[in-house]
Length: 68
Picture (cartoon, rainbow, N blue to C red):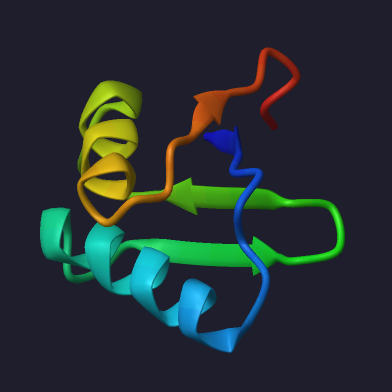
């Protein structure tokens, strides 16, 4: 799944988003690119759950249609 998260700016953002998604699935793979404001994640969770987890940490995200 690939998401756009506009308000990511630093390493703290990366850690917070990664931890939020890994709370859903500790084995989740999370790749955050601050330059493109993209998060690529895979794990045992739905896109809706991932969006809710990021939003709960004040990182509103949207699912991208072109997700790999």
